[in-house]
Length: 81
Ligand SMILES: [Zn+2]
Image 1 (tube, rainbow, N blue to C red):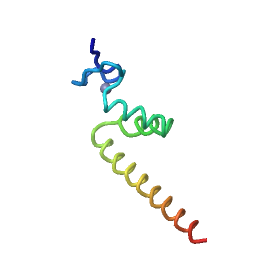
Image 2 (cartoon, rainbow, N blue to C red; image 1 turned 60 degrees about the vertical axis):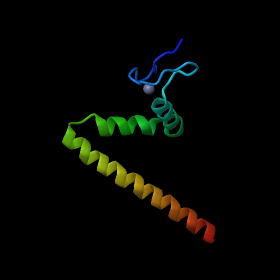
Image 3 (cartoon, rainbow, N blue to C red; image 1 turned 120 degrees about the horizontal axis):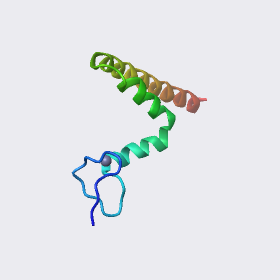
């Protein structure tokens, strides 16, 4: 007997051996990888009005992009030594 996703409860995907749809499994993987950062990001980005959300999304993307660039630079510098 197929079941609907236990997290979003709105997926069109019918599940036979899994509890979550593909999108919710992706969310679960991100939670496993980033833990509390995911909760903080959701609270800081989505618990706002539309204008504030747009501003925060742009800000979070800039921060993430900046962190990724720092990691790449530090790994590159580390390898050069
Ligand atoms: Zn789902």
